[in-house]
Image (cartoon, rainbow, N blue to C red):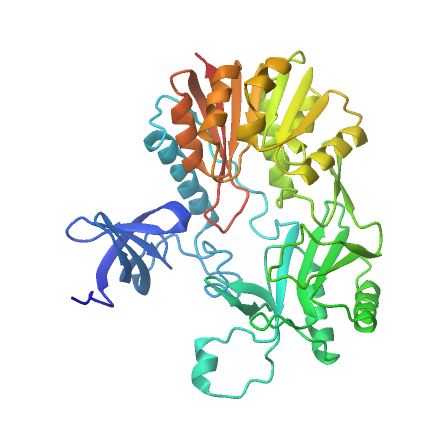
Length: 468
């Protein structure tokens, strides 16, 4: 028997926001509907994409009544780009829904009660908050429905912009973007115009050929810029002319680097980086700490909010100066060094060797001789032998990836039994799962949601736990 197709749910009132930014409503018979392409407060007709026993996944096809929380999106690419899905909702309500999601996850998934929820820390900048952006070149840009239906012949097939969600081979040609401050837009548009006028080959994603592949830009808080090109092949004369043009037009570019990448993917981590001009890195400073940011470096993309996140983490840790602190998933050691000035000793663990190398270099740069860093898979290196060979932690800070902590890591934390745990998370659902595993031994005192990514559904959370 064939499944019914194109089921439309009518007159669905969307009342709140759910995971991954969907809006949630109910059918007349009480079944939950998770709707994409709309915001809480809207009344919509929605097409069912998936039907589960307890809920529907659907997409809005018609907005019957607009939410009072709706605002006009700033960007002309809203709806196509997929990057800033909440741009049509007031920032105040974005923060409300983010706070609610974190609280509900901790309570429902974690099964925790009687903890203090501090008001979400909103971002001072609602736009232009990112210090790093990556764009892709394509010789077959994504066409809008209107363009396809017009049956016109389009000669401007080249694009420099973002991948269309769910369609990796389709690139949206960006005219504007409100995520990175100027001259980000100006540099991208100038590169596109120069490449078009000079007949440079844009990458062919399907056939894996072409010249210009990706463009990455990052800046520091001093207004100095790094530009990185990935080129599928070397074309020395074309490359040098393009780079000379850019450096003459944009004196803000402190260093210009490039990589030749003939691989099937755009990952730069296994590529050799060539320096065309400058030192090949930028320096960043956070409350007196210096960090060297290279093309491959991980560094928080919202500088001002990252600074607030580190300050609050230190505040939650409430160090007196005589504590041994463990920093799990330390990355390039940013949090470790931020707290090191108030601690007796800091021990950082991370699985990526390049990150550990950077952490060691930064500690030396900042004159911190009380930081030690170890590299290895967390669940393997953070074992009984490690605990026996290192001083007991008074305070443990953990900032794992979105998947949260492996169960073995949680078990080792319970064996280590620090007096205090500060858990920083970019996914409150997996954080709540991990907190549930520790609730017999630790009391959750308070949480503080932090908004690092305005106009999106993403939210960070800091939790403070004290040993019972």
